[in-house]
Image 1: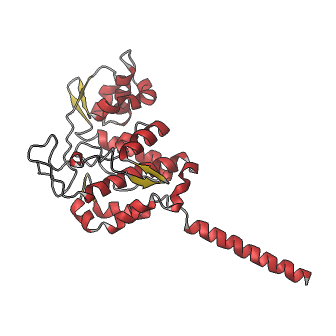
Image 2: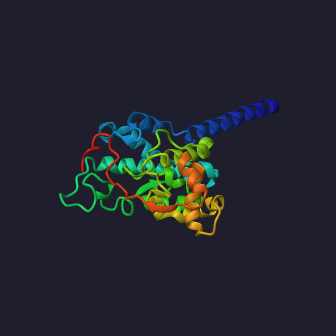
Image 3: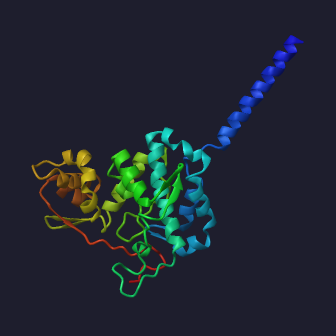
Length: 279
């Protein structure tokens, strides 16, 4: 009888462990971002986005947005650095897509400060629209300036988060994933700096994205040591990231430490495949 009770207890114990394991597995966060990958595959037409099609097919995006605050996402603070960084980059980009299609098609006034089809026509898009992620209520500015930049201190973040504009680093056609994050960030840097919106060589001058004007300090610690000379560390940081990730002609000039730096105008027109010609 005693043996039977012990055996029965063992069976019940094994069943409970199995049930708990299955439950944990079922509730595990998908760090491969399969649903989000499907959204990107369907609607990113690199370097543009088909927002009209995305709005017609928004059910999956709504699911993706919800997953950032699902129970499985609420343990975010205990994840690895790569898991957390990928999570917040993907959250920023998915929430931006949702903000656009919630207001699409965007039409500003006939006398706007910015292009009529710009994300900047959405009132409070970065500072007032709120989203739920990992048990937090956040704005896009919160994610970029109070989570990603101060927590991870990696200038490549600026090549990964997408502001839905023509001069912005393009939205990647794949989610950022923990296992490939470093290579993906390197790739995003190279893609952007190889584009006319990233850097242009003009004689002994490098004409660079205004992102470097706004966030140049974020590149100083890691990239300034790459470039010799006594010019200020901020400028050496900008030249250093170009030396490391820029196309050959720009990288070679940046390594000398000599070129003048000039900032390109920023085109805030929506990165919409349907409206590229809209003023």
